[in-house]
Length: 233
Ligand SMILES: Nc1ccn([C@@H]2O[C@H](COP(=O)(O)OP(=O)(O)OP(=O)(O)O)[C@@H](O)[C@H]2O)c(=O)n1
Ligand SMILES: O=P(O)(O)OC[C@@H](O)[C@@H](O)[C@@H](O)CO
View 1 (spheres, rainbow, N blue to C red):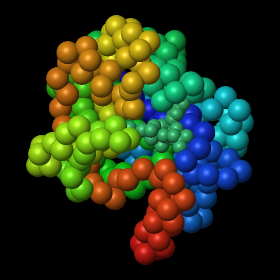
View 2: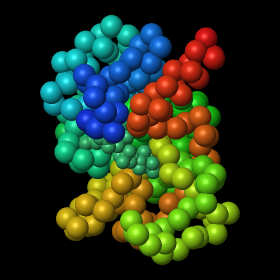
View 3: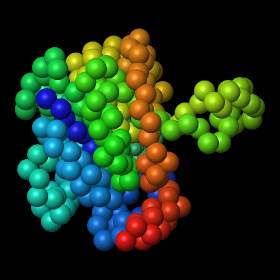
């Protein structure tokens, strides 16, 4: 089976003083989350599309799905306390509802990256059918500096640096085994999901993303996203 999992379980604290988690904020005429779900419903190879959201926002998400989405592959699941707990909540749902088979894969995506393209989704599906883990990345535009809040530690060669986006896609059993092998300390250091597998020694295949596939994190990002939608309308 090929699953999609849209990670919509966050609080959006960096969006500042807003009445709801940022994935539910309007982008032009509909919520950011709906823009993203619509991109995934265009891909017929998904057997189910999981939307994993905060427990307090389940009924709100159900109302949005009823209003905007007609695809019966969409399933709403309760998220977790951090991004990877949300990811694994979705995996637990798959285990419970469908069981896990050795050829099962999942394409996981941030709900707040609404400008994802069918090409990026397709490339993730193609890659994850032959690799255990897949990361969507774009070449670093700015030089990456590694450091503390006071001191530069390293300035890696920019041509070897990428910025991670999503989707991040996985052979499901490999993801489960890799996550179960993590220590609590390791889990606390993670800001993405591919590192779960790299810590377990798995190689990660790269898919090229696009700068348009940016994550809406701050009020500035929302203004940019609104301008992009305006420009395309
Ligand atoms: N417990 C969490 C935390 C994050 N996410 C999702 O992971 C994606 C990327 O995370 P981020 O931009 O950090 O979202 P938030 O954690 O909501 O934002 P912040 O860090 O500003 O609170 C978002 O779609 C967010 O909804 C999630 O599903 N479950
Ligand atoms: O939850 P945060 O927004 O802090 O981080 C999420 C990002 O790491 C994720 O969207 C990709 O960048 C993964 O590489």
